Image (cartoon, rainbow, N blue to C red):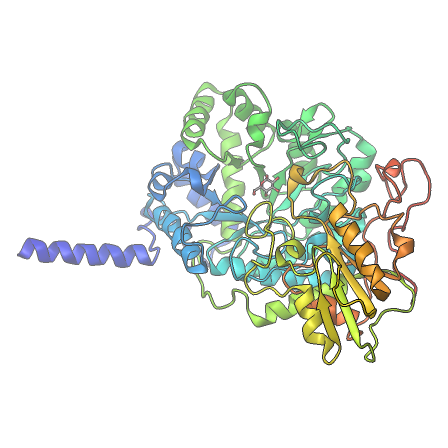
Length: 609
Ligand code: BGC
């Protein structure tokens, strides 16, 4: 009986301890838990207690689907990530907290109780979590040219991420696109290095005060790859993960400035890209990672490799790992085989292929970032209440309003209050998945009205139209043959991400072209709203339209589009990149088309008021 009672008491005690992430008692005399000490002294103190195995653990980043909390404790893993779309079985905010909490409890049980980084992408809010605020993707935000806006969005994203335990964001993207055929154009802040620098730095400034680490990515030269040069095995990849010429002038004038600005703003994590610079994979380039980034730019945070990137360097996993770590990768996004990594890293250090000093340097950088965001000092799981908060949704709506670029307007917009009837058509009219794009709930995004809490553009038009009648047919064919005053075609790209979005022909789909033609037959004036992750080739279609708006990938707040259509707010955004008239103008280098002919619209364009 007594034994049972003691057993029960121990069980309760353990449960309480686990539930509160209580760290183990630190080694006698250790000072690193003391939050009043300078970060550098805490780092050195903790490092002095660590075994080689513990140090290797800190350099390990594993995808959550590949590792249990039990093994994460056994291998003393330093960081876990959810690849985009990798959610817990119970895919609710609570389910996320429980999942991440279980890994943090494992970390608390290790000898030194070093808390984990839990990383996830956050290109447009914390789009992984059902119910989180989904902001416009970066290219639209860049059209707003408003660093303050980005800083506020980054802060909201940090708060919503941390509410479920995500304390490390794989954002902002600082790549500079040159070719609209690339599937990652919408993740960027456009092709102007100064704009990317200002907005990227604003993002970094926005996250840090909220105990969340941002990641400037993808170092470096991403966007300058040549069409057809992809080294990926996936056939749809044509330019993503491709080869960029090792152009030193382009590196210094275009590709480095955004990273320099992010580092100066306090970025403590930089992701090495999956592309090739000249003949060298970025993850193996000690010139780029160590000489330029850590040396010249004075970056004292850590370099994390991208998904499996380290293993694309050489033919054997051992050689790949040795080359990348020696080149300057500090934490390896494996993302799978942590046991092989632990074994091979140990062997490499024992054989002298990787020096103990290099390991210490890597771990020092990782711990510095952990201390800097208060990971040892702040609650692991703060309150959930900020997730999808109404003020964040209002901010997203404001961001949509400020991102819409008016391309053409033959006196149609704003829609007059005397309008009797509006007809709406197009594949993106009633589709919150499409308006949110890739990296929303799933890596490749979702189709249909399935984004929790989102408002479609059709719904927004209906609720703003008041007494004006609004009819909708996706294909633009209306049974009633009376002509309406205004037709609004909302057309655009299916969601995609990374190389799955590489396409030889960025243009409107046949389905949308037909819907526009159908709608045009039954309306007096036609407005076309383009929902897309990049400028599309619309040179032949544009003369047929009375007004055109580029809405990019606006995210969950379709209401922001209706606000501008009805004149509640003005159109203020300008193009963040050049809009080509034809594919023969690609690639666009420093704002100039390849064949030096005039684009459809220059960078900075918006329809004159
Ligand atoms: C992408 C990164 C992303 C990572 C983790 C990779 O495929 O290139 O941008 O952060 O996956 O999801």
